[in-house]
Length: 403
Image (cartoon, rainbow, N blue to C red; front, side, top):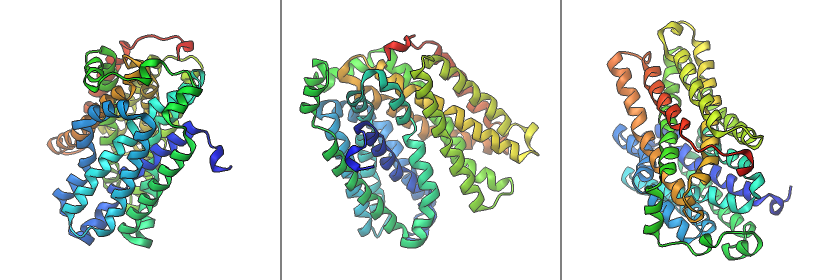
């Protein structure tokens, strides 16, 4: 297929996957960085958390800014910042410099992904929007799993700087590709019926106030945080859990990558089911319900002597749980209080999600340390799922045609 023939909306989704590769590279690079740069455990923790800290502190503000400066320009700018940060790795000699570039990667990542749902909404007919947003819900799991699978092999060949350079060049190429394939905002408005409010957005503080004073953005954002916080805790500690169950380190890494990747299936299925008229509320019921059951099977003492069953339960946890991001990314464009606040609402959802991801894994680790094992993890994840079910029950009911 010729590059120019790829649908612009699919290109935006691919751009999200490329941005997620920059996030997913760090976990597999930590052991190499510790040896090459003398990165301490504390510094490694900051390298892992910097992106989440950026999202939890300024996600909604960056989302508001992208609504003002233009969706296409924001995605391209994000990829260029990611490219510059990747190329900057060539000159890093100390952990402090790497942390600075990691902060820039966090900014580039947010710019690249917060505008994407709104941009996809402009690029596809409304009748086809839901499947594309379901695909978009899989961007993070796809990028992270690819980084988990390919990162170690690439670093064994060209080192960690080579990986940084390769991903930087990939983002630079993506920025050029986006610029060539997606028409500027003004031309897109001429070709597609965009409401006037999108063409002439309100001042940023009015968009921010409108978003944060509406109930639906809060409901969707908190529901997403309740999902991402527990999913990252389970997937993040899965290599350690697998090793404790007797698997080798390479096997634990491969098992984790697979469990991460199957999350994509749930997100894609959510888009298809929503397109066929299944309500987001019902999909969220299934998603959060499956999280409770599968987490119980994966961590309760009743299955302590059944490692294969536990792993299959984690796979189920990730796969069916993928219905949640696929549904919420489709819902968030409707939760926005106006056409000009879609990226602001996505930014608020990202900010709440990053907050959950920042605090969720440490909370689960603390519970495991106090309990002397992982056997109470299902209690923590189950509490999040119950709250998610409560929030899902209050989502506005929309007929299939409204999507």
